[in-house]
Length: 84
Figure (cartoon, rainbow, N blue to C red):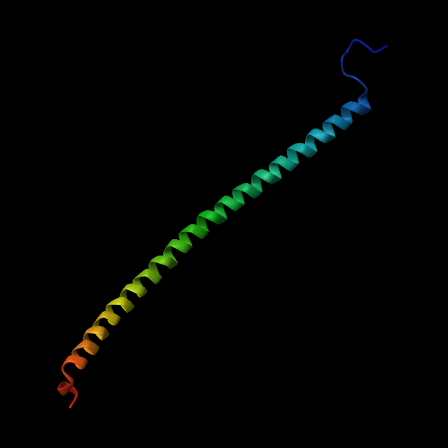
C-alpha cells in the first residue's frame, strides 16, 4: 500500500510539475501575444484615425473646389457672352 506522506510516486510528481511549468509557459506566451495584439490594434486605430482625418480634409477641399467649378460652369452656360 501507499505511504502516509501523501507525496505519491516521485516520477508522477516530477511529471506533474513539468506539465504545470509547460502550462504556465503556454499561458504566459498567450498573454504576451494578446498584449502585443492589443498594442498593435491601438497603434493601428491611431494611425487609421489620423489617415482618415487627413483624407477627410482633402475630400472637403476637393468638394469646395468642385462647388466653385459647378458655379463657374453654370454661369458660363447661362451667360455665354462672358467667354467671347
